[in-house]
Length: 105
Image (cartoon, rainbow, N blue to C red; front, side):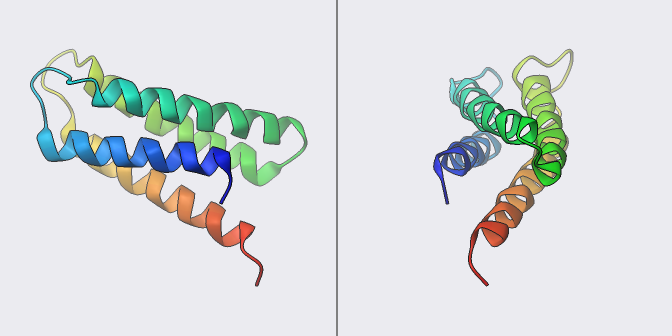
């Protein structure tokens, strides 16, 4: 695992904390999740520019997760916790796939 995936894992841990607490008002954990996922996203952008098609696909998924984190952080009504649970699963799968491709067979 590298630094980028470490940021992704940090974002995942923050999402887990938010899901466990389901705060009415953010206790900074969603801010931390956003910051970590943005760092992960920046690395995926750089990898995609170097020609990594798989990293461009991962970037699309990371962007979707970030959108949902923002929707929970700044909801227009009730926080969409079910969507965050789904996004958590997507991020987990994304990081696991990244780990598998980085590991020697």
